[in-house]
Length: 592
Image (cartoon, rainbow, N blue to C red):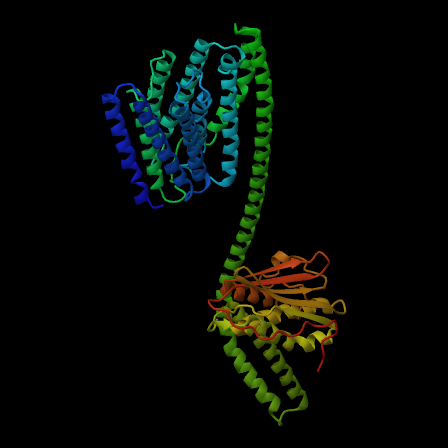
C-alpha cells in the first residue's frame, strides 16, 4: 500500500478523535455513549495496528523486528479493547473489576519495550536481532513474573480488590515510566528520521500514561464510564500512535541511519535482562520472609519464583550459546581476514617487484638487442665464408648458437616486462587450451606423460589477448612436463570450468610437487639446473594473468603433485565453445 493511501488514515483518526471529544462533552452517560466510545477507541486501535503492520513488510533486519513488535503491542491493546467492548456492548453489563483483560492491558507495553531494545536506528544484522530477541523474551517473562507475583494472588489466590487495584496500578505505572525513560533516552541520543519517530512515540506514550492513570483511579473509585471525558486523552494517545506509525512508513526500506549514540549502546538491553534475572532471588526472599501476605499467597509466590528461575535460566543458557556461536564466527572471520591480508600483502609486494624489475629489464633487453643483432649477423657471415678454415667456421657456428640462445633469453625478458600487451578480444578458453595441449603433445609423449583433458562445453568467452593466454597455458604444461619428466612420467590433468563469474583453468600433475608454492611466481626463482631455466616463465605468466584482471595460484595436492589454477573474469558476452577435445584416455601422448 502506498504512503499516499495510508496517509488518509491519519485524518480519519483525527476526525474520530475530534468527534469523540465533542460527543464526550455534549452527551450524558448512556448506552449510546458507551457504544460510541467503544467503537471509536476500537477503530483507532485498529488503524494503529494496520499502520504498524504495513511498516513491517518493506523493512528488514532490526527495523522489521521493531515494527513487528510494535504491531504485536498494538494488537494486544486492540484485543483487550475488543474484550472490554464485548462486555459492554454484547453482554450489556459493566466490565468487572478485576477485569480479565487487565493482564493484556499490562503486557501490551512489553513488546513495545522489546522493540526499543532492538535499536532499529542502528544497522543491525540478523545475528544481533537473534540476541535482541532473547533479551526481549527475558524481559517479557520477567514482567509476566512480576504480574504473577504481585497482582494475580489478590485476584485468584486470596481475593482483595483494594490490594489488587493498588498492586496493578503501581506495577503498571512502573512499567510505563520505564518505557517512557527508554523512549526519552533514544529520542535525545538519536539523529535523523528516527529521532522524529521516537519523539512521537514518546508523546503518545506520555499521554497514554496520564490518561490510563486517571482512568484506573476512576475505576477503583467506581466513577468511570466509557465515553467520558477521561477517554478523550486516551483516544488522543491512540491517534498519536497512528501518526508515529505513519512517520515510520515514510522511511526507506531498512531505515537504518548513521546514528551514533553513546559507546555503551550495544549492551544496555543485556544489562536490563541481567538485572531482571538477578532481581528474582531478592523478590523471592521478600515475598516469602518479609511480606505480611497470607500463607497461601506466600506459597504461591514461592512456586512462581521457582518456575521463573528455571525458565529464565534456560533463556540465559540459550543466549550464551548464541553468543558462543557469534564469537566463533567472529574468530573465523578474523582468521580469514588475516589470511587475506597476508595474501594481498604478498601479491602487492610481488606486483611492485615485478613492476620495478620489469622496467629495469625492458631497458636492459632493448640495449642488449642492438649489439646482439650485430653479433648474429657477423657470426652468420663468418660461418658461411668458405675461405675460412673448418675450425674457424665451427667456432663461428658456436658463436651463432650462443647468440641465438641469448636472443631467446632477451625475448623472455621483453615478454616478462610486458611492454607489448597486444589487442584484447573475446577468446574461447577451450580452444586456447586445446591448442596448447596439441602443441605440447610431442614433448609429453617423449617424457611418457599421460594427458587427461576435460574441457567443459558452453563456457562463456573472456576478454583476453589470445597469444598471451596461449603462452601461459604452454608455460604451465611445460613446467608440469619438466617436473614429471624427472621421475620418468606421470599424469597431467587439464580442466576448464565456470565458477560464478569466472572461468577457471586447472593444471594438475602427479609430479613431486612444488617446494615453495608462495615463491614460484617470483622473478628468477627456479629449481631447474643451471642453464635449464631462467626463472622468468611463471613470472611472465603471473604478469599476463594480472594484466587480464585475473588470478593465478599454485597449490600442492594432498595426494602428491602440484596444481595451478588460473581464474579469469567472464567477458561481456558469451561465445559458443568449440567441441572440446575428447577426455584423454590413459595412454601416452603420440610422438608423431
